[in-house]
Image (cartoon, rainbow, N blue to C red):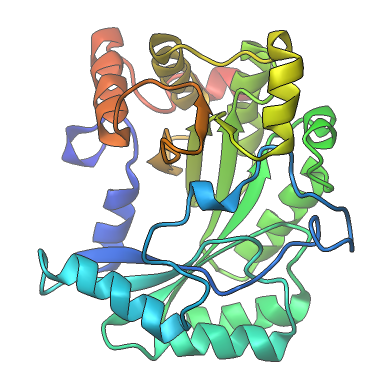
Length: 312
């Protein structure tokens, strides 16, 4: 068992080890775009992507970074007045700009009272050596975590969803970032079209080969106003959207094959009801997590149980 008697290495353990106080992420929409939207790599973005599906209500791109930090901190501090905060650059590609513009935005967030570090979400093909130099120097003074959208380890899947980068690019950038002693995370979507259950489980084997600190998982969701929503309407039979109980089992089996020192930040995500087409499980994220914990215990298993077997 891991800390807190959980059968997997929970991200909260990582934060507890790094900080002597409770910390909360504040999501920021800094007005970035994406090379897969502005034409430099493609147009229309990844087929599953509608950024409204994961941006909280207080993260308005019409507000400055300072205003967004103030709104977010006001929201959380009413319940936890002693809490500290991490500025989470979440929406779109948060390293896709000039180095001067980027560092100005990061420094503005870090300057807000109570902010103890940065989490920056981006694509593996949008990280320069110059920016890695900046993050390396910054990480010696404050907390920095860089999260890369990997989404799949299969290039045929990445091509199908119009991702416009390869898995090899993800692996290379994860290694380059970790070599700078910068904590690095990956984001994966389980159930992308064309992938079998064994394909999905094999993602755990391949990710375990990388120097990852954290991992975010979530189920494929069909979101309104996306290319995938149109594809789903025309060819629903080409999608395998997991029923809740099957997805719970999948998460446990995935974690069994995952290297045991990788911190799992989440297993699911829930898009706003007004945007979600399918699957609609009717549960909050924490309720699904409780079902996953229960399944771990029913199976008397834990993260990494079959890690050595998978890597052989």
